[in-house]
Length: 75
Image (cartoon, rainbow, N blue to C red; front, side, top):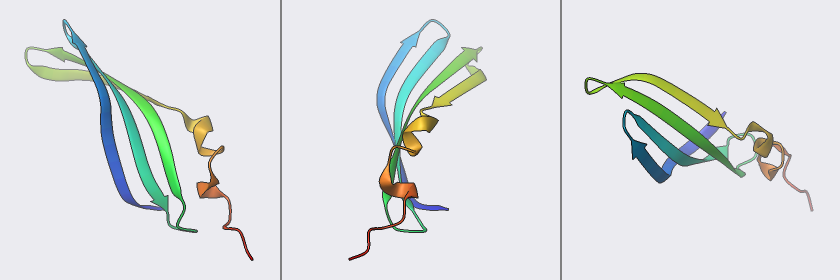
């Protein structure tokens, strides 16, 4: 469905056993070649040097506000 996927970490915040990341994923919609951007947040919990929990949230409504899922304009 998508190609040329790039994930960027925009911010990292760490305190005690928690790490929070603000991320941006950019990808190309295969159907029409349009780029889509998907911002997200990831929160990880660590114990004894190991990740024991991970939670992710993405701005899914943002997908429908972008031209990536719309057909390309015709001339």
